[in-house]
Image: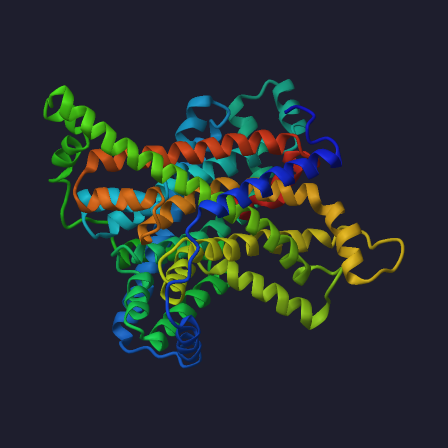
Length: 500
């Protein structure tokens, strides 16, 4: 693979193979529209969107409080844990722990903790804090590694300790980037908090799911607009000088607790031991259990990989085209602000929510998930790519828009575009597995079923399979990114919002 991507021809080959794989996957994917009148349902949703209504203000305020406190408490704990791991991120064991934490989706963590702590603030906060700590450890660690090494070398030459070197050189140089990334994680935490509501936690998502299921689209519109307001107002209230007030207020308003306590922890851990070992099954019964579970793992992994491959290629296509809405090469003034606003809107809506709406409109199949992930992930990459295109000089000769796009814009930005897509690949795999909770036969479908039937041992093995698939995609993605130019470190400087 070394040197494979060094030439433009190799980039075309790589793109061709990924696109060909996606086309083959389409042949095996279930992408039917099963509802009779999707247009009518869309019309009802559009009407509801224009007539937002809050039926119960007390309930709305409580949901907003839970959404914000879960997010803030989760991000604070994740930042502390992530920073502690980032300091030692050069150690293989620390990188492994961080990778394992972030490879399991927040929804899967929540399904695990619900079995022990019930529907509680402890479940919600831990479900956000653990995977976020793994992600923040990775990004913080990379940011600390990429600072200018000259001040550190000067201190070492003067005989200063490693501790002094860290706090007086590396940390101050990386602090601005770390603060910026922490702010972005808060936006992600609000989205995650809403998604956790769809599995029963009392955030905005809980009421949003109820409103969508019952066709109360005006109520759903009000909740959706509330979510967008929380995200877009972050720049005004999520500031370092206000955190000393906000963080204690969050812990006082909704203390982290669990009404169920930890009394069920022992039984849960006992049930997590594989049934053949726990109950000393005979060989024939053990083989039957292994076959039953193996079929679920194979089917879930196959469907997850298949759906993710289609979503990855469509995400790239949408991102490349969508980036022109936010590029000075094609639009300016109000047109550019409108295009950028559309990308930011799609980025702000969780793909879980988009998929849920798609299932109502189009019916159960893989199609809503493909559309949801394409729109959400494509908007994230398209927004970044459009901003980066401002650094690219205009073509030497004037040409029509289509020619400029094909012969100047795409070739100039293509390596960076691929790097963004590969950064997002791991996330798409993780999200695809999770969307199975909504009934799509990816790994999440079998994980959710295992929890419903209290087969905790099977659920853990299926979660491990999901994590292994995510980690495998991450490893392949890293190898591919190392072959791209500009160097990975240069891309990391602007790519942090992709690693969500």
